[in-house]
Length: 161
Image (cartoon, rainbow, N blue to C red; front, side):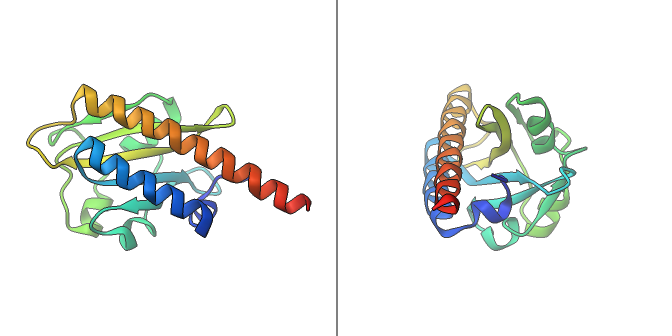
């Protein structure tokens, strides 16, 4: 099964994914959350699902794996958090018109591999994402991986029938 933007945007996957993203925004006290999935050639991470102010922009955008925070987390499998002075790829800020004040990113694993990443941006409180926010993001990324794996298994079973 290919874990991709188009897979995540199928109605059955998107419904569960968007519900989880709404929970991520609430529990991490963020302005938005995005699920990023690799492009077919692996050189970009594509916004697959978003809960925030500009889902139509993010769900059709992509950032390069090289030179982006989400790309670094995808390649290393190690979560991170950045603040307003830390470097990040500017293309999403430019497209949405919303500056990144802080961002936290965690890997989404399914079937034993990193398949995408989950990001939250701009805490609704002042400052950076806290260690508790990071723990909550990790938990929700784990759950997103379970959703993706389960939905992929269902799709494969439907293909056999």
